[in-house]
Length: 396
Image (cartoon, rainbow, N blue to C red; front, side, top):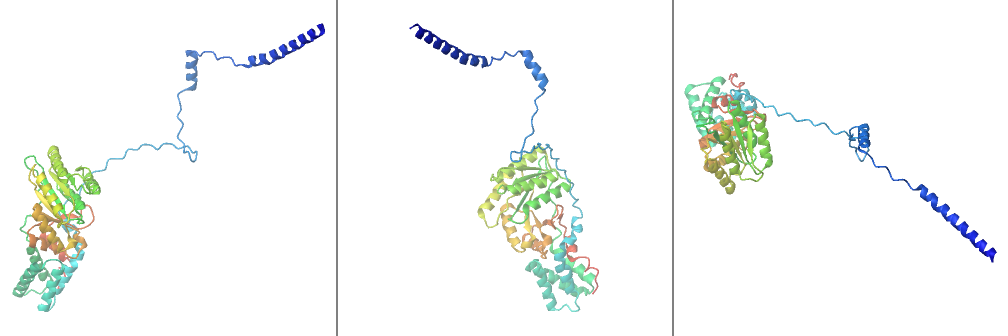
């Protein structure tokens, strides 16, 4: 019995020793809790680390470090000095070369024939009508030219050219007032309203008119009342910025009359000489659009009279331009015509037709795509350019 008791005690002792051997090593491997950090330790680490460094951004697709681009401020656009208007028509006479083929070479060639019989005079009439002078004006010019040629008995090319030039200038009625009323009155700027059909080059011509005014010493403010096309307002603003002129515009689709009113009010507040208002292009047979143009006129006139209403006509449309001019005149009382694209047509006689039918003076003519290719109209200089210099020096 004693032997069994001793054996049990030995087994119990072995079991206790084994258990203690497993538990004690685990207790020894447990990490000790860190000591609390002091403020002095923290500051020391920050001093050693230095200021934080931002890593440059990287392209996630390639892993290549990409440096941010430097910020460069765009320079303000330089203000241009437009070409003086005096003498522009003389300098741009070469642009009328297509019309010169009709007036200069064609007509003078016919007049220089040995015998001016009925067939020749009919050819002269056809040439003038083909140049869009108009039937009535052509008959008057030819009748007077026939009579003067018969009475004076002229035969040389220079004499015939002088006679033809005199008749054409007379048909243009040099007594008409072609000046632009752009001077302010009693502290109120002059207001110019620009109207025209779609596709006549109205907004571009409006920008060129602004350059004409600045070249003549006027301060100008532009009103972008063509609110149907955002591009029109952008285009006008670009033209204005080139000569240092402010542009008043509204959101796309805004009331054109409201924008025009704001432009005139801004012009009064800033004390400019002239406010130039560009309106939306419209077809003369669209009653609603023409009524809207009349509204623009009435709203603007609440702040003062409109000094000029300029109708932009595309010279390449020929006699169709007369109907356009007539309808616009009824709605807004057109005071002057600006003929655009005159360099692109052989029908320079449209100038005579417009004034003959409507009694409205042509005040400016566009002779090219250049920014200063808009010239004040002078009948004598225009006819001289149409006839050309070559024909003047040629003798029969």
